[in-house]
Image (cartoon, rainbow, N blue to C red; front, side):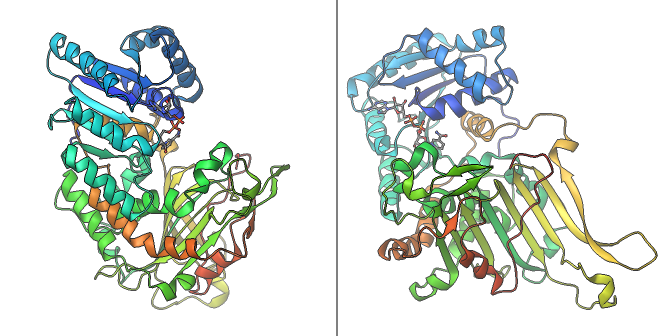
Length: 506
Ligand code: NAD
């Protein structure tokens, strides 16, 4: 990982510059990097889109996005003026080769005028169907061949299944070197997710017990309280398995389960993560119904308001077979994790928005306390909360103050808010800075993406070939289908949730 490297002069070519991602995430992230002095002195941001805009009107729409979405709130007028003097807009159609000539003219001008040749980042914030044409056209105008300075950032989803991911990899790798390809999974840029590496490998305490001898099971739960909102059309062709499990959840699982890397190099860390995916036990067709659960939300009440079911959402097929909830039980066939179940679940319109990793340790070998003193006994648990609360909790048993010997679980808590004064950077800030520096640690490598697809293909094919007769099978504002509780309860466990604090919005 290139921790202290200063970014070189950089040009961001944002394909889809007028889109939602640019307004909501990319420009606020670049502006925050500028405010915190991470941007190089020489940089340019070029918004690309079909709609015709002047530079001024484009910048004005971006400012609205920053004011609305940036973690640092409304933009300071002078700072924005200084930052936005680096922004321009090029009306262009991704399909039109001539428009790429305009881009290369702009880049050539910067190359001639700047103090050193810039890094060029082609950021593909467009519909994935455009990824191949953009990559091919960049190659045609020779905007792809400088392996040291030219990079391409590819947004999710990377493929729709194993075959399409392979096809896209083959195309990209025929144009770019793997070291130029940055497949983004914004989850990996989140502070708490990155902290998994620090937590596991910068402390002597956990590694000796981080294995099948001490850990009973692991849970990764990523739940959203919202439905598909205005993304119904897109989501109906995707579903929870593709949207969350194939990328974010499996990436997090890799960080929990990976072997200690030899050093902090991007390739070393990515190799150890791929090892986990390769060791994951493939799903045999006859086991799928025992080890997986799918769900789709029905209507219900959320905070006193009636909400529609998934099949009534705009853009969704009224008889849709798409899952909005998925729960799976994985095993990792290696020495460290043999027979330790990894339960993962994700769903929309759930009772709570939260992303939690919960590691449950085995029970003490012998209980010395009388049964009445340990009624609320709880095995040790390590809970890493990614959002909304950013914390790490170690649940241990303690004696409740009093004259009786009564034991109850208490939390030793490391809470980001209480520990650090600085505002935590957004995932996109971390990832854009890494892309500028040429650090691929937190980006997915081609083989990683394909191995993750390979693992899930039997489940995807099984679910697609069998229409669910029970959909919708959970109501909005619930914890998902009852069968998801059964998936984990039959092994003697239950899904762990963090209680919502009083007065906190769900
Ligand atoms: P969007 O529909 O808001 O924007 C799409 C952009 O593509 C627009 O700027 C549009 O002008 C441009 N475009 C469409 N056809 C074009 C053409 N022929 N030539 C040139 N430009 C064209 O989409 P979005 O929400 O910004 O998403 C973009 C990508 O980012 C998608 O791959 C999406 O899956 C991914 N993504 C988005 C978000 C998000 O929060 N919006 C989050 C994660 C990933």
